[in-house]
Image 1 (cartoon, rainbow, N blue to C red):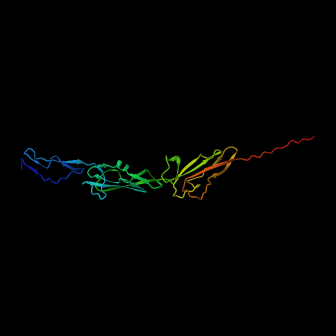
Image 2 (cartoon, helix red, strand yellow):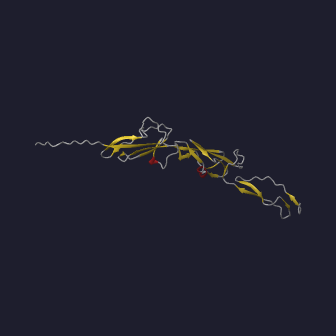
Image 3 (cartoon, rainbow, N blue to C red):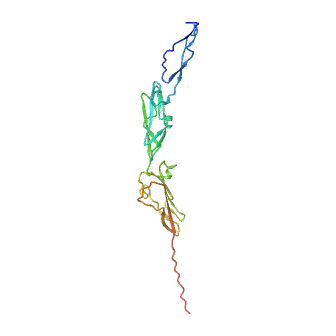
Length: 238
């Protein structure tokens, strides 16, 4: 009815995938005129990747699919479930890189892989699984930039009266793998005494039957050689 304030009932709106209803561009309650009869629905654009907020998934927009990130041989923390636009090709590379992942002892995220391509058009819910890379039970310190989480350090060094064949050695050892000093993957270096010295012993003593479960520091010690000198008196006659 023109020239009288009325409230127009709002129709049901259906946003396109990737959008949600925001507001009407004009008030629904007003005085309408012949020139003022159009009210337009306004929409807000959604991101192609949306973190899940409600654990039951009730906040998933229409036309979106649920993507879950998991790991094996480790754990995750923080946000791991997202909604993705089902009508676009979506690149999840940055999202996957941001997942907080912690490897179990003996594994590392460096060199690990996801089981599917991270760039895709999603037509259904998907789960991505990350596999950590397996580490060696014994790792020379020269082959990595830092000690792997959970590993123990084993050092073989020499005191100042000698050296070790190949130089001092440091290894990182997985304490759950029953590694022993003197085994194929944790060889005991050969001590080399300086001139006039001989190898004495290792401090601490190396027990080849002991499984390495804590940090170890084995120092090769040397002691001076005993020199026996014989003096012969001149035969003097009077």
